[in-house]
Length: 546
Image 1: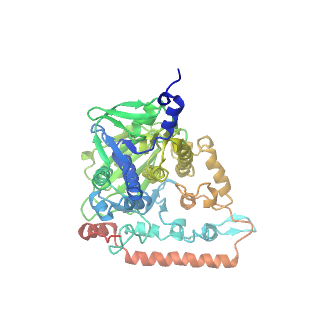
Image 2: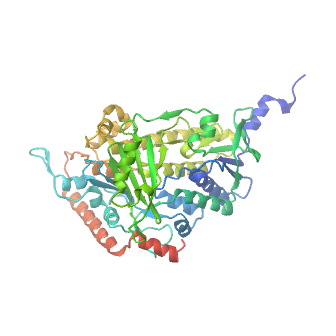
């Protein structure tokens, strides 16, 4: 007797493959969970009328890590797309403006040693690569004796962008008359991570119709195909979905624990494995607010210093292989001593770091975003950036049904494996170009065995060619060629002059662009107000709506 059509395995498989994606379940809140929920909800609400739901399940018993206070300019677009007013965000999340990063004592370890990685692209970046012309000014090349001759010219970032001068003066990147999310100088944000998560939660629930369940996930249940069918919660029962997004943090509840997707460590490349974080009050309400993240190198790591509108967030990222926790805290206290009188009253919190990422980010009907996908280290604020672009790619390529999900997953895995690898290259670049030899940490960071082959290849190319976006295979990179230029030439790397020389017309055009940077620097320095002054006005009057 033949089986009925309903019990036909082929038919069941067909039904499974044609199952539409209507219910999306996000496990875990925090910044990653709510950015993902908001990005998806805003996209779906705008394009579709019905037949979808987004549910976020988070535990009340899991405390947020509370760091990750630096962002990239992409956050402006992310928040704008969610329908969030920049004024509300600034007021409620203790936001200040970030215009780049200042790296102190990374090159030689001396007190006056610093360089900038601004957020403005180098002048002429769209059409002319001015780096070669900067070298011609900074290090004139004498063909006769084939020597670089140092000159007393401006730093690379100062010569090609007005933003270093703006940051050095503590100025804001816009005016009170500049509309929300618009900029005079490109900017990102420094923010209170705990407040930001709560702010996003309220907006997603009240404005974007995200379902919110506060409960503990106690079981993860597969269907017969091996896909996750539902998660079981302690009080709310089963929560069903067709797509599950793991935002459960380092625990990686779905992708790591349930599906056992391996974790790929990169401790052999990036050495730091712990952070000591502390919140530092300002001396008074008039204390200046830095316009950049300040990263100051130490004996076995570095200290971040982020100025919010209400306080500073400071932390020492270090490698336990080279110094003890006690030494790390002592170095952090020594850093704080000139600006903090009550150090012993501060609360220091240790945060372990296991640098690496999952070998796959999307497995079956589960995709990881945020710490559940991996983490490297806080340098260059790439953690939230990866959350943003992960959520955006899921929203842009959300599978219509299960049949096409594996295709989207494969593309997602290829894209983000590449992005994580390039991120590792870029972070390693900061360490391996150092000239410091005052500790084994810095010496070991220059050892060839700790440098990825992909980075070695690029450095071999850049010895003779200025970094270009054509050096990378993706149209959208986490860090573009301009970022590599700022770090390379800030750290003292030299690209040899072309044997073809520089044409007179090209040099004259470059000179005009350098003059434009100088003129823009003077004008902006004269018209922009300080970070604190602008934030006070925004809190009092608000910014113009877009």
